[in-house]
Each structure stands twice: as C-alpha cells, then as structure tokens.
Length: 194
Image (cartoon, rainbow, N blue to C red; front, side, top):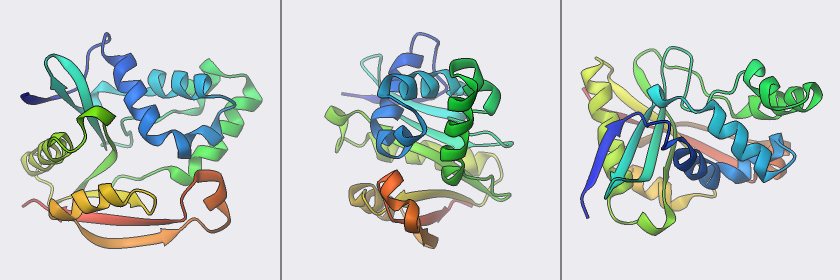
C-alpha cells in the first residue's frame, strides 16, 4: 500500500477527515458538546482544508495532520461557527470548555494542531509520513522548527514523536481540569527543521 500525502481535502472527504479527528480527540473535545453527534457535527463543520495535510491510501483518507497558521488551526471553531450549529447558551458553553485546549501560533515554528491516523492503518508509517510533510512545509516556509503537544494518555504518539526527532521543550498539568478532559500532563515537543 502506497501512502500519498497532500495538502487539504475535498468537500467529499470532509466527513471522513472530521470522523478521524473526532475519533482521535473525542475524549478531550466531548465535554464541550452535549453529545457525540453535536461534537462530530461541529468539528466537521469547522475543519479548514487549508490547514491540513491528508494521508491517502488507495484514494481513501487514512490520516490527517492539522497545523496553525495566521491565527487559525485545522479545527478552529469561532463563537460564530458554534452559534451556527448550537443554541446560544450551548455555543457559549462549548467556547468556554474548548478555550483551555486552544493553541497559539509560534513566530518561528509550525505548530501542529492534531495528528490522527485511522485505527486500522496505525503502525504502517502514515504518522511518520504526515510528520515529514509538516517538517518539509515548515522548512519551505522558512520556519526553524515544528512544534506539537502530546498528552500523557498517548504514550504511543509520544514515542513516535521522539523517534522522529522531537524533543520536549515545555509542559504542564491540567490540575483540576484533568477529570474533564481525560488527561493530566501535557508535553510540548519541538523538532528543528532548518
């Protein structure tokens, strides 16, 4: 099976990319929404094709990697977007619950905004290919590094990032919010590309 990495996704692929993202990050995103259906709907609607690398095998989406640029990430639901899908109070609640998870741009690094691979495709090099595409994009954009954050409940991902040359540069704890989001500790990792 040959994995091909491209930038962006088509309208037809949006539901598949949204489902991949929701499946990977459901545990920490679901508290913002009253149901899986609402969460999946909002994530899928707020996906930005211009902030993603997509892995395909046999013309099917098997993975994606989002990134931040110019203030927006792959999934950056604004209050207006949430309000378009949810009643006012539910949109306000979702915005408040999602705010501690928000990432910011870093001036000299490409900040990754979620990497996910279909469960039946894990261990086949898809994640590595997505990380390499992100590194190449950062290099071509004149940035010096790629940065990402990994949570303590995902040791397999952290091991992949370390194998790919990412090193810890920062971290923290969620404290009392750990029970809401399903993780306590997070580590920010960075890989130099220039």
